Length: 199
Image (tube, one colour):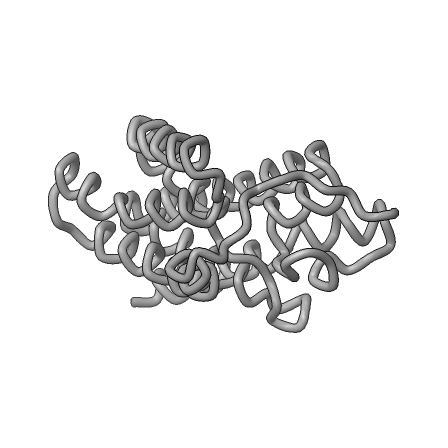
């Protein structure tokens, strides 16, 4: 039980380092949460401030999840990996250092999956990309991708503690997209386009 608590807390602190907020604040002297959708994540950064800094934000978010997951793997194997990943996701969504207002966690979930099973990572990222290309909505691709994780994991690895933790991560990401889901149902979710505000 002690290791679970340690890894959740370690992951949470790593996840609380929100790259969207830090990068936009450093380069543009703004709070990304006051721009665009108000989300502190890579999609909003790319949409409002440009693709290069959006890609950098995505890379940083994936990297912090990889770091947290590797720490968890070293401590407790696959279960520890997912425990630290869950903590990192919670920290990203509700960061200790930024008034508990963060992102939606898709990149963090992707980084955790990359460490867990690179084959599953590429399959799920491919499915995400297909959804975005067909319908032009990143939120739809994100929700579909995380929803597919539990059945794909079960087919590959079977039922275990890591599946339970991964499912919890998926449900959290879907919860963070609840407003997007409502807009998708109403047909009001905007397509992903790049628009640049005056910097």
